[in-house]
Image 1 (spheres, helix red, strand yellow):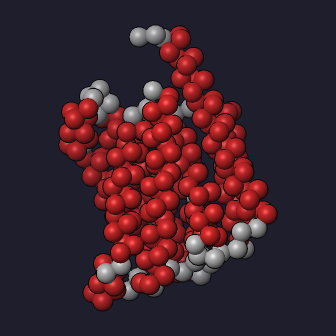
Image 2 (tube, rainbow over the protein chains, first blue to last red):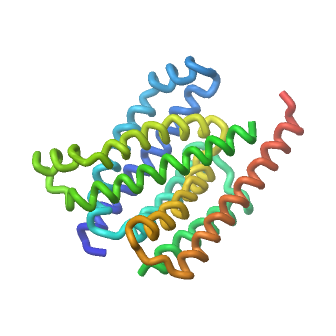
Length: 120
Length: 133
C-alpha cells in the first residue's frame, strides 16, 4: 500500500472505532425505553451524534481509500477495526472475551486475512 | 426473539453489502479525494452515491436495533459476514479474481459467525434460565 492509502486506512480505523463505541454508549443510554421512546432517547444522546460525526469522516476516508486499492484488499486491511472495537468493548463496557468469543472472532479475522492474502 | 435477531442480522448484511458496492462504483468514477467542488459534484452526480446513503440509513436503524440485544465486539465481528458477500460480488460484478484461498477465507468467516451465533444464543439462554426476571 502507498503512504497515502495507509493514511486513509488509519484515519478510517480511528473514526470507525470511535463511531462503533459511541453507538453502543448511545444504545445503553436508551436501553430502558422501548419503541418510539427508545429512538427519541437515542436522538437525545450526545454519543449518537459523536458516532454519526465519526461516520461522516469515516465515509470520506473510506471512499478515498477505495479509490486507491481494490475492494477486496480494502476490506481486508479495513477489518483490523474488528480488533480495536472488541478491545474498546472490553475496556469501556466490560464486555467479556470468552474463549468461544475469542475463538470465533479469531476465526473471522483469520478468514479476513485469507481473503486478503488470496487477493494479493 | 432469536428468529427476529437472525432476520435483522441478515438484513444488516444485505444493507452493508449494498453500501460497499456503492462505494466501489462511486470511487471508480470519482477517483482520489481532492477536496475540490468539482470532485464533490462528481460524487453527488453518481446514482451509486445515493445507494450508499440509502444503505447506510437502513443499516444504521438495523444495527442500532440489534445493538440493544448484543455486545458491540461480537456484533461488529459478525457483521464482517459482509466480506463474504462483497468478495463474491466483486468477483461477479467487478471481475476481480477469486482464488481458492479467498474461498477458504470466506468459509472461515462463515464458520466464525456460526460459532458466535450458536454460542451467544446458548449464553443468553443460560442467563435467562439463571435469571428468569
